[in-house]
Image (cartoon, rainbow, N blue to C red):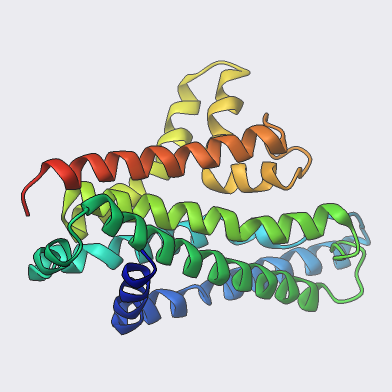
Length: 250
């Protein structure tokens, strides 16, 4: 298994798309900086205060899951497109093992990358806010927990993207599905009465990540339930991907 993981790590490193996706995560810093600057100026003109900016992660919370999900998609969809998946599955007889190795690699890269982006986003927001009393200090347990939990959401998104590409065997199809899935709760909640609308909205990856950290007013689930749901996303995604890759000819 270790050799398979090492092989998948080499493949991921050799893909130019990996570096493109990681470079695109810098967009979160620009969005966060612009939002923090706008709010800071608004509060300055009115002499207001209060922890409104907070960690700053909320301004761009929807972007990292999509980008790291794309990382998972591109980690395997290219092999389907070029036919190299045949060589992979010939070398690794147990197909589920090849999928698990890919999932391990993309999840690890996404977790580390997501964590780096989270800290960079936080420090960008605080640098823009400066000494204004509308930011959040890492000395606050809630703020630190929110930043540390960001990597988990990115890792889950990467595994979901990998599973979608395995099931659909199409880069465009998997990317469309990856972007569409997070939008479904936002659409569904509009047609549901309270409190069901809030409950559905709490199932998105950004919301679950904040609930994992115990951020107040981030949704209806506590840290334990949020962790369970995130783990369920990973398990269900991998099981569906393994079922398809085992039963389908490539």
